[in-house]
Amino acid sequence: MKRLRNIHIKSLVLSIAFLLVIYMPFFDHVLHLSTPNLPSENRRLTEKPKVDITSLDYFPKEYDAYFNDHFNYRNDLILLNTSYKFNMLGISPFEKVAEGKDGWLFHYEYLEDYRGKNLFSKEDLKKIAKALEYRQKWLNDWGIKFYMAVAPNKASIYEEYVPDYVFRIHGTSKYDQIMDYLEENSTFNLIDLKDVILENKKDQLLYFKTDPHWNILGAFNAYEEIMKAIKRDFPDIDPLTLNDFSLEYDTTEGKGLARMLNMVSEYSDIDIKFEPKFKRKATVGKKKDYPIPEEFYYKSEYELVWHVPDSRQPKAMIIRDSFTNALILRFAETFGHTLYLWDVWKYQLNKEIVENEKPDILLILIIEKNLPMFFENIEDFELESSQLQTRHYSSDD
Image 1 (cartoon, rainbow, N blue to C red):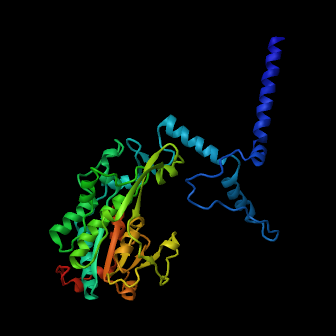
Image 2 (cartoon, one colour; image 1 turned 90 degrees about the vertical axis):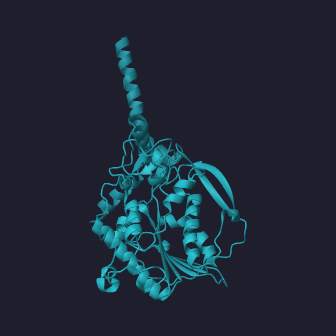
Image 3 (tube, rainbow, N blue to C red; image 1 turned 30 degrees about the vertical axis):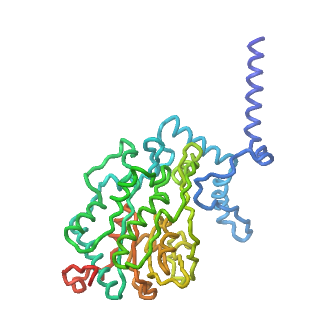
C-alpha cells in the first residue's frame, strides 16, 4: 500500500512538472518572467515575417529564423549555459574571449597577434617602408605633412594579465619589427606610442580591463605624443594638456568583452570622465558625403567632420579605426577643421579625398593588430620604383 502511494505521489509530481513546463510560455507571455534582452546581442533580432499568400515558399525558413531569436526563455538558457561553462567548467562560453588574470579579459584575436606567430618577412618590411615613403613624398608635394601612429594592443601593454597558456612564439612582434626596420632603413619616422604608454601605466590605468580598447586616459597619452611630433612642424599649434580637464573615476559594470560573455554583472571596470575646464569651441561640421563602401557596417561613422569657427590652426585629415573614438574631441579642439575617415580598416592614402580636402596634416592612427591589414592594402602605385627612385625622402623635402 505504501509503495502504491509513493508511485501515485511520484506520478502526481511528474504530471505537475510536465504541466508547468508546457505552460511556461503562457506564464511568460502573461507575467513577462524571462530575461528581455542580452547585452551581447550586437545585432538586430529577426523580425516576425508577414504572411503573403501569393509567396509562401520562403515563409517557413523566415519564421524559423524568427522563432530561433524569440522563443520563450531563450535568453535565460543562454545565460545558464554561459554560467555553467564559465563557473563550472572554467572555459569561455564565447570563443572570442579569454579570461586573463585578476579580472582582465582579452580578445582572442588580439592574443593571436600578441603571440607573434606570423611575423613580417624582410620583403614585407621593405614594402611597408616604400609605401610610407611614397605617401610622405606625394603628400609633401601637395604641401601636406604626413604622420602615422600605432595604438598598441592591450596585451602588449598589460602582458602581466595575459592568461598563462598564451605565450610569445618569438621575442618580438610585428610592431617591433616595423619600428626597428624603419629606424635602420628609412627616414620616415613612425610615431612610437608604446614606450610612453608603458612608462605611464605605472601610475595610471590606461586600458579597460573588460574591453580591448584603451580608456580615455590612455588615449590622451597617445594624443600628447602625437601632438609632440606635429608641433615640431607646426610650432604655433596649441595642444590640450591634462590641466585643461578635471578627471572623475567611477566603478562600472563590465564592458565590451564582458557583454560578449553576457557577464557584465560578474565583472567590473573603471570609467574615467574628462570634464573640460574650458568652453568647447569645436562643433560638428558639414560632411562631403563621400561614397561609403557597401561592406562597411558603421555607415554613420565612415565620415565625421568637426570644425572650429574662425580658427587659424591647421586642417587635419585622420584615417582611423575604433581606437580613435576616444581622441575625436581632443583633435577636434586642436585643429581648425578635422575630417575623420574610417576607410574600412584599409588605412589607404585615399588620394581623391585628400586632393578634394587639401588638409595641412594627414594622420593615420592604426591599432597594432591591424598592421597586416595596412600591409595587405598597400596599392601598386605606392611601390613603383620610378616614383621612389630607390631613395629615401625626409619630411623636409
